[in-house]
Image (tube, rainbow, N blue to C red; front, top):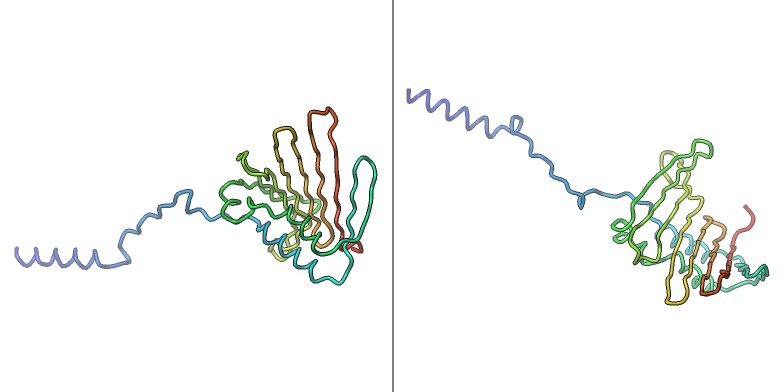
Length: 197
């Protein structure tokens, strides 16, 4: 009896120490542990700005308001100042992944994927971002454009900004200004550094 009891204890000890028959611990994940693979909009725009800095070409700015368009060559300092519109704080990784939700679509005709980012947080200036990307070799590395919408509310004026960045070519800032006046004022600024492709 004593020997069979010792044998049973030994069997239990060996079985409990054998990793192949150990129960696997359950993986507990909550929403804070889910890794989001959002498109790095901020990094992409910064790389585009760096690219323009390296070009030995003139940068042309077109300004349109009330049907009148004017054009002028600008220096890098003004280019950087205007490009800041595309670098809001809301696009830093932590805020972007916390405050925005992503929807993606694939167009079979154009072979482009759209990544759409929206937020319900009214305190953020940016409320929408669309990224149009073409996959090459299973990697989304051919960006066609980035579109953003901003809303800036002031006591007597609201500004609705629609920003469009065409990769490797130009960007546009379209601003609709609404006041107590029934008619809105529309302004467009287009900055071009590559008009050849």
